Image 1 (cartoon, rainbow, N blue to C red):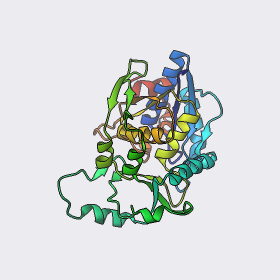
Image 2: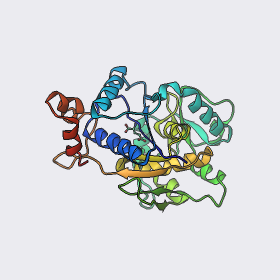
Image 3: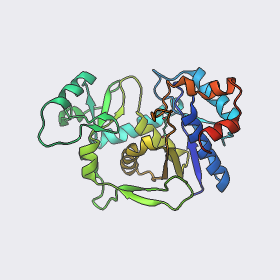
Image 4: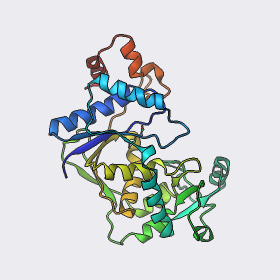
Length: 290
Ligand code: GLU
């Protein structure tokens, strides 16, 4: 497969130095190997995404000297693809509606349990399965409700010789990858029944990202280490939806002077702010170690 990578920001706030690093790394790698660099606007969460942040993303990336191939993909244009994938999983009995509130989930997971299973996975608290009853899976797929993947049923449906794992290149995407494996048991115990569609919008980050990476023909996903655990979920979804698993590079995270990872609310490190103060794109590259 020809090398293609992407930068996939959510338009929910200003791009900061961490985004600049991720975008520049993916862009430079694609250009070095003569591959493609694509842009995807992850605006599936309509409650938090704003068009003005999307405009700012284009502005900041252009200022940084980043050019992307093709028209950017927008997740808000892809809802029918997400819905089709949800229907396919629903028809196989792998989804169930969940009516638990956050408070219910916290209460269920703080109830005394045997052993010392972890309570947190890549999606926050591991769901205790209150709504995981077969009766709720019959009939047409419900709309405007939270849908969860029954992780155990999903893993059972996959061929017994499925190899769970992905190729990870380490810090440089062009380095030879090494295979990182995990077990089905890990997924049940440490991830559990993740949400694949939300009450207020169709789909979820995990579902949309695997479908979009596949349709954009992404051969290499270059993104932060914070998403390393989520990649295991993406691999399971790729198996369930018969999609290829790309090669992954989980790069270092840009931290502030106290060692904390930058977040969207770190406006102080917004690229636009540095620009307004007279920094050049070269200064930004230096600040993130490129
Ligand atoms: N939209 C995600 C973010 O802004 C990135 C997802 C990804 O790269 O897979 O953090």
